[in-house]
Image (cartoon, rainbow over all chains, first blue to last red):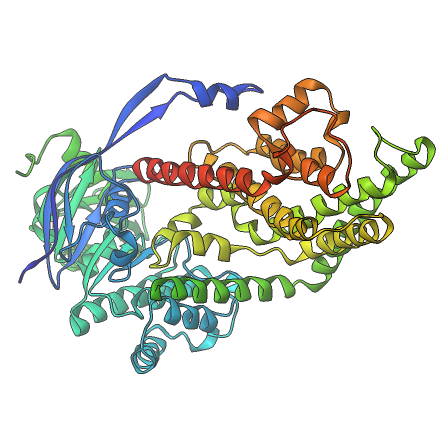
Length: 332
Length: 272
């Protein structure tokens, strides 16, 4: 498969000016020269092949959005090379954006006061989509994203999840081969997240659309992406298979057990008890050594259990660990 | 060429969306419409009352001032409606909340999108009141009409629209550099209109010099009006002064486009 995105030694540095406060603050800010340099994206290189579904991970402020803004032509890099579908995004931006789809999670592309369907009609004209193609796509997405219940509702009255579904539909009507998603599940409940994940998977598998999605929700990536890239402080820390990352660097999983009685001593094989507070106990374990169900079976064979909870190691901690302990070398 | 028709088509569709949106809030629309209209009438009414006592301001009668006032109001109202997408506080807000980025993501000429993003219909109140005052002035004044004078009326009107439109664009561009609210820009736009509603000869030198040499608004309405109303020029400008309006307007607008392009490049190199 040929590369659809090529990024080489990409840099984006910002000058951050000192901010003055007070009545004359705004005036002083206009002339102030005191500044510091922030390397939002610092020498990133990667390639994405046609048909891949890649997760771009990192804590807030790591440089995810800045990278995405450069890939979509909104921002011009300080230095480095970006080629997407044989084009340089920020050169001839108007032509370029006609061939990609992009959804930035916290903002909508749709018109606030218009019913969803009218926004979509307007986009048909904007992207010059032929009637039959438009109808075909709309019918398919309506069903998959369950848009019918709110197609005639003004965008301002939609829930966050509904709006996200409408936005994703809007980004795909013109048949882009490449879709950028910035935090597509942010702020959504479990059901809404799942629906969107299934749809993303569908368009990737059935339509062969290449997807690059940023998130700080590890479960998005676990369910969707075989490949992850991790960025922090503007540097690419990891680029490879997700399960390898989890096995090598993920923190331990936690099993939290609430017993019916206050047992004097509890013994567990394959896990470590890290906390004990009355009937409540926290056990750390690693997936390579024991599965959660084995651990639970083992405990319930000897003790009466009131309640259980399995906690996954969260990505923020994993990334911090990787970064602080320099667990990964810089990729070439 | 095909591209231009496409942009115009999209502009037309965006405007119609925007107007339908405004009409959803009927009561609010009606009140805004009436309020804007009332403000214009009250503003001129108070001037007319003062004039009744003093007969004239700087040698200008009530109907001569009505001519300035009506023209300035009508033109500024029209500009404020057509260019509302560039209205600095509104556009600044758009940049701050990131909906400007959404425009960059659409394959449509950016300027067409901004023009299409807002079309404040209630400005019609100001336009209608302004034109009524202008019409009254034109019928009450004994103007010696010539072909040149008749041609000047629409040219002055369009020049005023373009001139203030250019100022709006320059003001909007400032939001690429600063996230603070840009009330200072209103000094030139809203303030500028207030200034040119009265004969420029009544102002102190420093203000008049500013509006002659820095922001040459004096050529947009005051000088054309002197010519149309056959009034002597108390400031002793060259005889060409009454005919400079379209050139001043084009110069300001061109400057605005240059600043806009520069600002956009800056924005794309810094983000917010």
